[in-house]
Length: 263
Image (cartoon, rainbow, N blue to C red; front, top):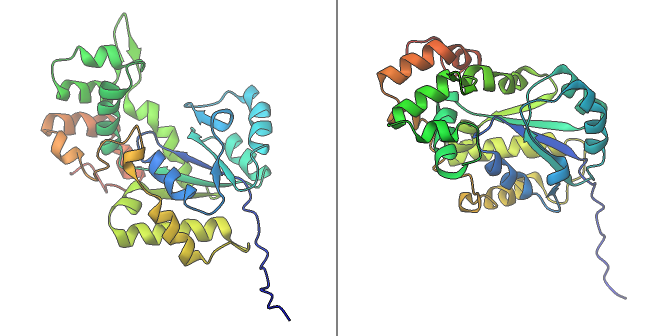
């Protein structure tokens, strides 16, 4: 008589969505999520690397998001809006949002434009500035000349951070997953539990967390530069700090990175 092993049926993971503040670890989070068994990223037609959506587009977006298959996720940089939040809720799509200290976003984004993104609207303006300090100030304050306009960092990026207060969104910070191995593992564990809640996963949560963590490889990311936490401290002098405090200091307070502008 043969020996039979009972095969345990596992559930499919319903499609979900991840969004991030630009230059906050998008590919880092993707690698974590792709460490889950059988989970894939649905790119291109489901990619939303734009700042915002006009309301007439929501019908099309609803259709596109609704066609992401099980065991897959869509991704993008998406401004918060009640309409987008309701759309995800109607589709029963869980949403993971990743954000980062805006000061480090400024540093990372400025280097990214200069070194890797010559098609960005700010590229030509930034490269002609004499110092990195001038580039940071331009990125923070924005540009408003007769020939060129670009919004300051507060106007451009603040709407992304509003996802933090959305009750149906699971928000995590880049610092949470990059501060230490212990902190990273705790956050990844929470991500796995959030996505697989009330489902039977193909592995135990602990085994899944190990795979998710093992899948992290910053070298596979074109946009990766250093991933340092607090790198702004090495880049900002007192002048840049004052410009930032005046222009975008309130965002640090709103997102919990500072209690006031005394930093």
